[in-house]
Amino acid sequence: MDDLAATFQARGKQLLTDMEQMKEKFAKLLLGEDMSGGGKGVSSALALSNAITNLAASVFGEQSRLEPMTAERKSRWRKEIDWLLSVSDCIVEFVPSQQKAKDGSNMEIMVTKQRFDLLMNIPALRTLDTMLLDCLDSFKDQDEFYYLSKDATDEEKGNSKRKDDKWWLPTVKVPEQGLSDAAKKNLQSQREAMTQVLKAAMSINAQVLTEMEIPENYLDSLPKNGRASLGDSTYRSITVEFFDPNQFLATTDLSSEHKILDLKNRIEASIVIWKRKMHQKDGKSAWSSAVSYEKRELFEERAETILRILKHQYPGIPQSSLDISKIQYNRDVGQALLESYSRILESLAFTVLSRIGDVLYADSVARNPSQATSKSPANPSSGNDNEKSNLMTLSDLLTWSGDLLDNDFEDSKDCKDDLSKDMDEKNLNVATSKVSYLESLGGVRSPKERH
Image 1: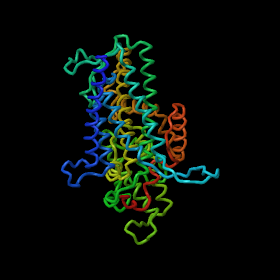
Image 2: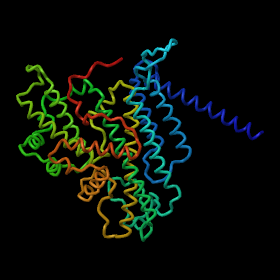
Image 3: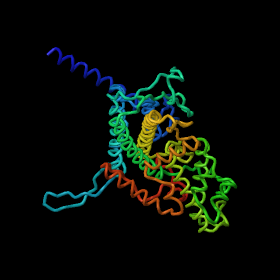
Image 4: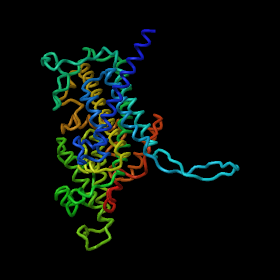
């Protein structure tokens, strides 16, 4: 009896502690992170997005090793993400329903139901979350590879020494003969599972960002035409008579993450400009142009093709200026939940894939030391040829190939159909529409805020 009473007492103390933590967390959300209470805080949507992002950063950190989370970290993650996601239970819409009256007749009434996008995507994201944690847990008892300490000598690191720009990550060591077949099979199985998680999270995140309104200040910051946004050289490459997106990327300097992101920003801006001009009715507007509607539509499709290839070949690239602007000025709390949750799952899945790649690379070097390259295969931002080859391997895992995007823009639909099929195989219900990633970027100015 004494043990039972002590257990209940400890449980009661834990509940009180959790309650205090939850009160503090939601107080910060209500204040919009402005602890002075002066009303100068951010919107509820951005406060919630920041809370989810900060929680993931504090719980998962760099995730530099393939190892299970500690029980304390896992408990904290599940508890606090549940608190933040509980907001979605109160975001509802009215739907028609049938009710039987006392006289036996049926009448139609309106009832509340969780908003459709949240109803479909929150459970899917929770499933992806579970798959990520299960993947890390699968390495609990493995003893075939290990990580050297940061102060290990070059002699200890041998051929496995990291030679990319992520020097701070620990070096992986495997047996001299390489991993056993069972260990390698488990790594490949987990890589396939994480690929599915990455694909699904990317799909949800891209769809949510597509549906977000474009902020006024982003539109005001754009130049008057696509040429000014892209630059003369890039503009001429996109507007030539015979256009090959793969040739364009092959001749473009993508040697660093900064250059890739800069190209992505300029292309997204040009797409917005061209789409807005195609929707512009006033010929005297500053947005008007002498370029024909058909040509502008062709240029916009080419730019979208390039953007899609970039996104799939470099899935770990930071968010673009357009995406950041949308997140910062978004006022829809439901969209903020979906975007931030899918974003952190996408980031974590990509990181775990990279760590799996590190181990498989160490195994290949152990089996054949002559295969050691000048770059580690896990770095998504290098311009080294060996690195690009490894990136294409990741792209192949994601079932997207640049060759499929060569001159046929309609292949994007086939790509989405393949993704939907893969999701069905994993029994994940993801609500996606038939709209392409950037199809909604070019409408008229954003509607006024909903507050």
